[in-house]
Image (cartoon, rainbow, N blue to C red):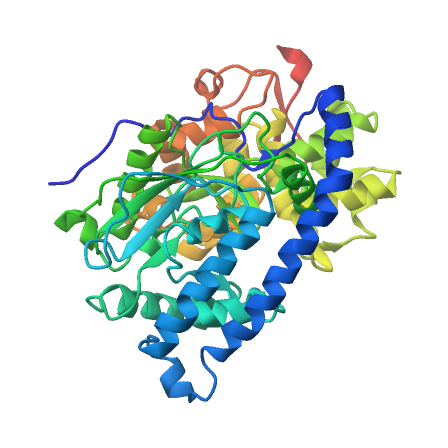
Length: 512
């Protein structure tokens, strides 16, 4: 029987990828005084401990062939070197100020739970959880394998190494995970952070399915830092890693609690669907932490919220674009003129791509640094797709009616000119509409294509009537100062609309 928990996601949750440590004047002074004394001492001790660990980590595999290194370490190489590295690891974190690690509950044995799923993930200091869990194996980025000492410790740990940029590497990682987790105790326990990235701890973000692919039991592990100052977090924006390290080591000590929850054994439905399994464990852990379980995720270094397979950026490029334009003195009429120039450019036959030098004149901006900022919101390459800027800005500006916007979008992305969209064309269209590439719009395409390739009318119907995709309009694409989208669609277009020469419908904000 499928199990579900009521601790569900909410659109009102705070941004989980930003953490800024706020200190009073007294705390800042105390931190400087203590830090000037504690930071150099603690960092020196920690560095010395890591240098001592390095040769022991290398000696574990000395003299072994590649074939032997690919098997679990056993015998004297395990009972001799494992306790040494475990003791030195604990000494390193002790040196950093983690004098005590409070442990609640009981760690499950290898055959009870091949996976330990740890959350929330706060930063690189979370690796201290390896100490009370007896150094289970981990998954690590390929970039870490080349680092001094860290690379040797990953080799000692027999970690699964994956390159996030290489699809073949990701496929091999999945294969290795399944082999290890279903080895019936042949391989050691694995420890994974299913959130996949660090957050500010205000919510649990969506769990990635990696820890749940094999369908084996997992033991959820809660990691808490019950301190007056939340110094350990290092997130997408805010406190830097060096600042987090400074603030943490500047404290006399830092409290940490590791809590083992009961082993979670998946149902048959969860074994068949790793995403369902991951979602249910996430909700269970969120309930224990008294936090919301959300669909937020970091996708290609962009924080997004998942909505029916559509990735919605938490920091929409279009809203940032409008903010930059208004700060440069733009009014609604100026934005409208920029939209007209962009649609003219799209229909001119010169192609969709524009370079950095052409974008300022297209937007009507004299301030080139602002144009460069807008450019960087949409592209890191030599050219940017002007359709992305036009559709995403038009969608949330309140200057273009929905029917006209969708008609223009379908016309732009209907490469064959047949009045309908393929799955790839729909994915590209939705990516332009929300401002970032879409990697999995299968659910939306399936909803649209039940009667054949989806048309403009199908897209309008689903976006205005489907309970999930209505949220795309009413929450994400809604102009901040406007009312509910559905009220403006009674007659198909917002009030006060007027047609430009290209047939795109533009509305006058002052008309209301």
